[in-house]
Length: 514
Image (cartoon, rainbow, N blue to C red; front, top):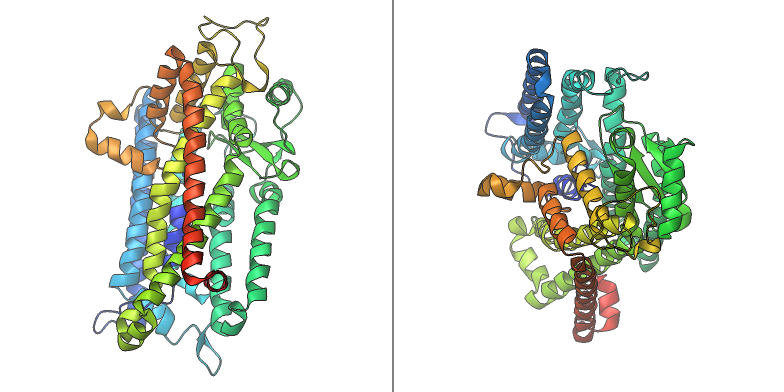
């Protein structure tokens, strides 16, 4: 289900690109390292000032017009995303235009030993302006978030809202888990390559790294619970209903978890590949804002990812894609004799690590985005099946209605439950639901809606599809078939690419390339 923030895959790639050892431009003439530091600090404060201005507007608007809270929330959400992009742009400008990247890599401050190697982890100082501004922006948004909480239905909740340190820590924990961990692993590998390059290229090290990567991915969900401060969903009618729905749908998991966000987020997600390390997570705001049948639909959406094997397929897709891309680029480098070109064009050769990363970002955005949106649609269909009876054209359910087990039915009432749930999630998170369809808002906003929802698709478009599904339930089976064939064709294409490269360069050489 879409929440307030997208999956940070492209952000991770952007931070990883900033950490590469590239020939970043030197500071402007006469500026020097200290001047680059001062100018970078000044530029990093620009998004913080924008965040503070936006926060002040929210507080003032809610004080004057508390009845217009939904409109204020929607505008705040849009502008907050724009400030996030401003932060990325400001950091890129500092790294490239103000010489901050060159200052980190070639300045006198961050090097160790007689070999003058960059200190371990020091490359994280290149994107450090982004991190600094991000934390300060969270602090700047706190008055706005507190004002939104005070004008919401949770204003009188016993737990109240976060303190300022608690609010910043709430966001920091998410950022460290979702962005800091993968970036940290990349930086650790890069530091090891600088200190012991012969170790990194050893076959045993590469096999060990692969095994560790698989183990981390499988076991990571067990770290999510303490990292985000999650706790088991307490006993009661909500947990009983979700457990009954899980049994009816045939979905296994380790536990149902509650994410206490003090009403800051309405979201649900499933994490984990294997049942003994799989959790279904619900935020407090989502549970409070959903009717029982809508909650069934939300749970059914997450169950759809499990039943259709989306998460292991994503892992296989990314591994196959990385393998094919690595082998393909290595084969191309051999064919073009890039080693000789790099010796002859040393200045340009230093930029060679960047194009593969940019291509990776474009590939993930286009191909993985296409795959993810199709899987989300398939999960939406299963979410509808989760609350469906055997009559496709039923006019409504009551307490005596028998729902079809294992999600094999699909009826109009089950579809409309997910429609309401999606619309409610959109409203709670300041997104576009039934009242803000991109088709009615112009081409530019429609394009922007797709860009920021590249993994899920805009909520309004998903709702539009579900309304079509409510009129023609047979569309659900057609979607399932199309997604299955798309996934098979994509996997076959990647495997065939690897096989073709292996047949040309030899299998031993292919393994060396990987």
